[in-house]
Length: 640
Image 1 (cartoon, helix red, strand yellow):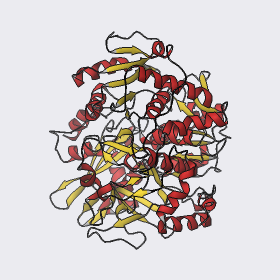
Image 2 (tube, rainbow, N blue to C red):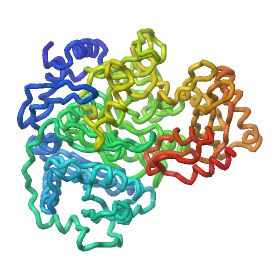
Image 3 (cartoon, rainbow, N blue to C red):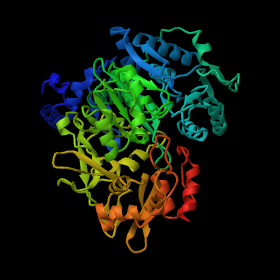
Image 4 (cartoon, one colour):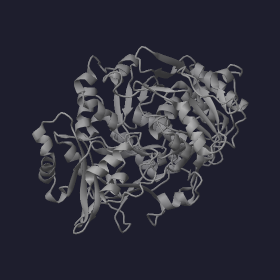
């Protein structure tokens, strides 16, 4: 097939074009990915596209050389130096910064020269503990420029979470800010670093960016002032000649399932996969302005707001704040101010803004928007319709993407032509070269629509993890031992409909088996969440003496409901589930609680709730990523 057709700009907007390219990509995956290689600039063009390996050890472009920073910065600075690469927006709507590709190159080079001056080499692993500020982008790209692997850590993490990651990857150098203004509060990042270094129990040097001008502790031997160091170095720095399969970064999973794992990506494969899916799923073409509200400490923000957007040469927006401060409408004010065309956010953020819908959208037009996206979890019905009808005014397709940290990006999404959108709930179709397979409990392929099974990825994808840092055997054990075919297990259960769209029903270990009936907790949560008295809900299973597994619902009620509804809330919820789904799915236990345990990215930590429901409260394993640990004891007391 012609290479130009395989790179068709409308491949995700036209079903006929999509089908032709998809069929070819599955029949000839190596040829498809070879045709995409010239999206990137190589210092040595590879002859080998992929070198197959067992248990997820496939190498992509093993004989090629590429520099991620050059692809994201230099080649665009050479072509259109004055184009805006990055827009940084403060919580104060009047305060923002516009960084051109030329300036981006200069700042990244300075940052790289400071790292060289301080003796950093490819043998090190740098920790980047930065908020959503321009220097956070500079630091990641500076490491990439020098070929130094790094780990990006969410700036909202606690000192113990930072120390855990630094110890796991053996990092002895951390880049941070003095503080981070977020939601009207000042987060003391340098203070957190000092505490994390004590937990590491070794000398860890810190490069500190002073953005807030606040008083911080200072150690003359271990602490370095970035801007003082940058004043003494050049704004020119050569790029490192890095192997295409070399480690670009280590990014840790969210911690919603046990101890966080250090997922490592190869440079060439990750860059190609994130950039091409950025084009199709996020409309990152030409002069579009993209805003992905995810933090760069998470894969959604790292892959698409940082690497994909800049690699594709589009303008990317970084916002330091939260969706509801200083006004409920701040997100939409930012979209109007900067004429954002493609917006991607988390369902958690949308639900937070929906609580005050009229105030949220007040005095904003959102007329610049063309595409709306959600990433991280499935968007519930009410939020989907509000997002589509109110935010996008019924004219912007919603791309409900599914991805994982381990995949380096998004392998499925609905086609962005409106007539293919199925309101809410599904994750759409497979990306080119991606073959999703559903298997039953006997490891047989499921070929019948609307039959649920465990979801696997049959063929390797360029963006997928190449290893779990520091644990050679973990890759096979965690992801490739669940099927005799030696294929990647996503850990999710799903089904596909008669149109080929996939629907996630839950995690494999979340699916309930009640009296022999396999029940999706997501389906029950959807019904409970639709109650006029419910603000949030999480449904888990627990050991039941008769049924084998019972249904346990943890429910947060809305604050402003009448007293009689509050008193009868459990009965209202039970009756609703019984009526809408089935008596079989009525929760055996409903606990009314004040809050649900969440990671700092907003995901409900169901493993904690499963333990509480099972009265297994002796050891909750890793809690470093929880944002509200105080709620755990409160829930335990209420359950008693």
